[in-house]
Structures are given as structure tokens and as C-alpha cells.
Amino acid sequence: MSLSHVLLGLLGRGPASGWDLGMRLTEDPALGWSADVAQIYPALRRLLRGGFVALRRRRSPKGPPRREYRITASGRREFSEWLAEPLSVPKPHAAALARLAFLEKRPLETRLASLHLYRALLADELKRSASGTTAARRRRRLLLEAELAWADAEAAAVLAGRTLSTQRR
Figure 1 (cartoon, one colour):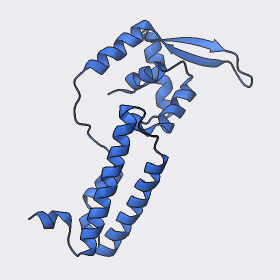
Figure 2 (spheres, rainbow, N blue to C red):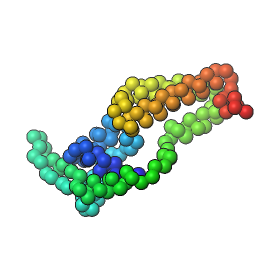
Figure 3 (tube, rainbow, N blue to C red):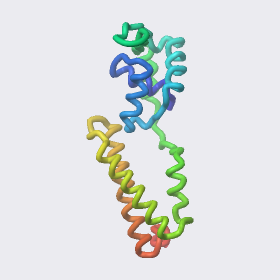
Figure 4 (cartoon, one colour):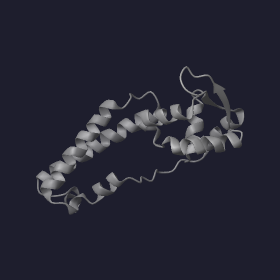
């Protein structure tokens, strides 16, 4: 997946500035992508050079003219072709997941405290997540619910003095 395709998908929902696109990415974690404006603007320039988006300058009530990007017919075709590619299992790359992978290396009390904190973060995120109006949002809610169930099961195992991995043996 590339940021360019995510931006094309967002622009398919309506015209936007680079700033707006950054806000949309931040506000909708179900998209599975994060980027800051320092990444967004170069991607938009590449899309513009490729003819996948068009740029329109609009007056702004405050500040300089606003640059508004719109997806072109060529951009819609590119996005459709990208969507048609076969799906694969996502490969996570997150420090938090790596720390969870080595949780058993920590003392039991610290492990339990970490699990409770992680569970609270998941519960807050689940409360904030939008309802299932899209497949991506429904997927995100189910993943959060599954993570909550894992955190509860792991905490119960820690309290019982064992880990889930030792239960299976």
C-alpha cells in the first residue's frame, strides 16, 4: 500500500487540501495509515505530476490562497486498479506490538500493570472509534474487541501465575 493510493481514496470522497487530508488520516485510524503533512505534500506533488490529481487555488478568508486537490479520471482508474489487487495479510510495524511480544520477559507485577494500561488504552480507543459504517471501521472495531479479549485473557493467566503460552503445552 502506498500513501498515494490512500490519498486518492480520500480525494475520491471529495476535494481537500493537504492539511485536510492529514486531518482525515488522523481522525480515521480505521484507514490503517498515518502520515504527517511533511509526507502528504510530496505525495500530492507526485500525484499532480502523474496527472492523478488536479490542483485548484481557492481564496481563503484568512491567510494565503488554499490549494485544493481533486482526483482526476486517471486518478480514479489508478485507485480502482490498486483496489483490484489481491489482498494480503497486513504486516504490523509498531513498537507497542513488539513490547507486547516480549511481555513475558518482564516481572509479573510489571506485566500485569502493563496489561491493565494497555487494556485501558484499547477500551478508550474502542469508545472513540466510529461505528461500523464502512468495512474498515467494522474491521477496526472487531480488532480492538479481539485485543481487549486477549488482554483480559493474558491478565487472567498472569494472575493465575502462568502465561497463555504455557497453558497450551
